[in-house]
Image (cartoon, rainbow, N blue to C red; front, side, top):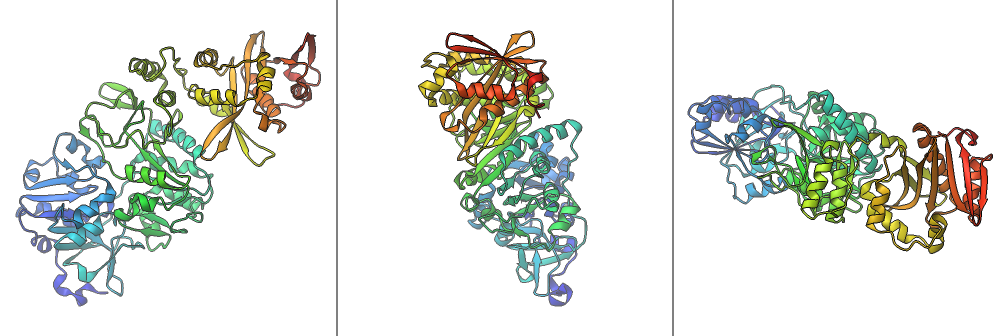
Length: 628
């Protein structure tokens, strides 16, 4: 459709169109990368514009003017989210932040709670039927223009035409300004440190995201940066507020297929697109993408219709009880409540869904390096997500699972993934608050990334998979539950007496000797619904002279499946790396199955018999083959 022929009276230059805005108007501006830059600049340059109240979600162009006192005397900025370009202005009170969930903003417009006089939007040229597309900015833009008394649209041929609920008929727009210009781009280049942190966080996220899951990616550089590390997954689906360049490699590798989605299968559901021209070209006329407004995309009831839904978002701080701050650094507003809570609650309602809060363990401030895992949120920090809503927290140091766990367990989980230099202080602070036992030992004050090399998995005869990894301090309750799940006979064979109590003090005594080099505890975990439970433990303890004492215990319903043999092989592999050359073991004469495990791997082992016990010495050079 040619607008100059269909409605020539509506086609104006920018200055003439903007002149229709009255003094004192409440003006809505389209979001982020879809904002009409030419209209915004024209409005700012028009000195007749006085006492204008501007509402916008993500603002970019206006950041060019917020240092100008003349501009601030004429315009009052009300932002629902503080973009990186506006953070400095927000920190000195030059903008007014409106904290609210993205899913609720359209209702604020429709209900008149936030009344709008004018909407400045950007659209693609109309098709043959007179429909323009809101392109990369449907989010709250559709509600903003529908609720405004006057709608002025910048028609830009570079705006992608997107599918879904993004179409606006020319009859619903009052004035058109024909002006082509590149869209705002939102691409951040990470420095070397950020790249390494995102790689490690991405590695941990990949461990909890299963094939066929539907995921959401929150705002911020980190969620976008970790996406590339999901490239070994299969048939992922996407239901998210914002589409970014981070999805491109997964789309090109066909990791994202949307085939397993249970809600709107085959399509990516989104509200915004923010990135480079490459992602804008990808979404243009691509029916895979289904754009809807924020009150639909971010509605927890809608989100929950996706089974196996995983929300991935970021945060500024997490305290030791699991409370999350995402919108402010102390008293200074930094971003916004945004979509985090909407998606966390949607994930909680989803069948087999859960949420991930991902953040670097530290931040760099004027006072130096500080921990993002804290005893208490900073004074004035906004509580975006309650401790009851948080499920999994991930830093570059590991995974903390919080849902359903006590304060004691949360402290141990979160301290374990804090930066090593802050772990002792966090434990001491937790003790002073009565969160944990007074005798609680802190996690090792070192980077345990090398433990990733010690993780292995094994397919069992019953069709399940067992994951082996080193025991961590946060496993205390799972370790205890494992002990009490064993029969008396199994306990006797392991400890040679009827051990009845496995107390906190006993577990602390064992943890005190674990350094993951001289001493090692490997646990075997199997999935039970969304959580894992311990079904086997294998250990070696330094006995001196390159000799380590090895022992195992496997839960009765998992015995006879080759687990002990697998554990022995893995413990040998780890022991070799740490300079050991032999294992020794003590077992009961009646424990024929354990003797068989040792003899099979070490056919030339030496045996010493004493009363009811057998002491076995096994040289690694005697093993049936080099451990892999």
